[in-house]
Length: 359
Image (cartoon, rainbow, N blue to C red):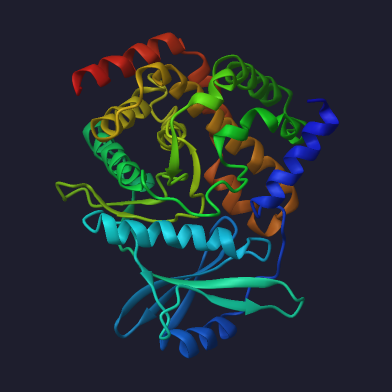
């Protein structure tokens, strides 16, 4: 793919993922009207920073709720996919602490909002999951493994799930990573561009030839430390799983690769330690096929690099979300560099040893 084609492909995929739209935030008054009319809910709304939805915490006399209004470019089918995955888990695996969808008074799982510019948005209400997020918890290896177990259990439960929109195009889906090389041109630092190209080469050499035969299913897609609610005093540790906004049918290994990417470099002297602890826990519940295991560290590096690239690109185009975006990705390039400095053969050996220990 030449540079021009790569740029065009990236633009299409980013647009399909709802990452190119800019919109005026929806007014709290309008949201309040819809909540009263369709959900019979009254209370105090507080805006929350998120990647692309307009998101609010609703405090009422009967409890707290999370209210999300989708961005204008996100299709109804994609919103329905996210909701359907959550409702499927509530029905088939009710013991898992997945955030619950609240229905309208009429039994619907979302409300359609038509804005003044003619664009359509979708409002949904969920139970508010109280507690600390993993990102703020400083967990040890065993607690990270518990978090890995939880994602493994979710992926086991999602195995049979299908939806008409589950093959949607999603820029965050690691299967498209090698087709997003055009994003490198939006990275101002020559050193960061060099790191990105190293990871693209790794991915191209190791993962791309195998893409068509990797085990696939619908996955959570964004099991990041900000979407995992924990209680350090609880034996289970993980007490809530939120945000199914990146749900998609993709390779199974790409699901644990997301949290692993977020954990890379957290301990600078051993940049893979926490990521491997998470993967060990994941494999207790959802073992990765032995031939695919060596691809897992490459997928984690690809995801971390992808976040750094997309963040740079979006911060240019969405100044109103710049602080949120850059805050979540501030150490990404440092962590890519630290992780590349370690022999991936050693990382794979560690992953295999952990897998053997729990087989």
